Image: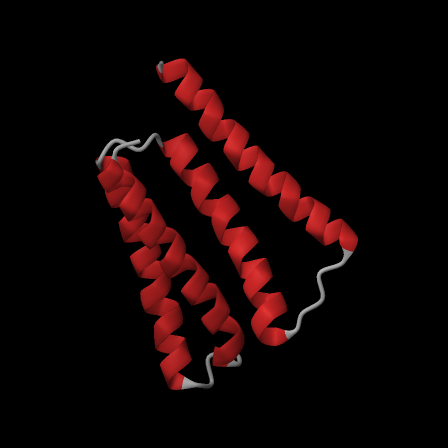
Length: 113
C-alpha cells in the first residue's frame, strides 16, 4: 500500500465514522446539521475509498480494512459518547475484527514480498 493510498484510506475511515456517529445525533434526520454531516460523510467515505483504490490499494484489502476499522471505531464511539454498553462478547468480537484485519493485511504483504 502506498503512503497516498494509506492516507486516503484513513480519510475514508474518518468520514465513515463521522457519518455513522452523526446518524445517532441526527435523530431520524430531524436535525439538519447532523443530517448533512451524515450525507457528506458517507459520500466522502466512498470517494476517499475509491481514490485509495485508484492509488494502488487492493480492493479486497481496502474494503476489509475500511469496514473493520469503521465497525471498531463506531462501536468505541458509541460506548464513549453515547454510553452504549459493550459486553464481553461484543469486545471479543471487536478484537476478532481487529485481528482479522491485521492478518488480512499481513497475508497480503507476505504475498507481495
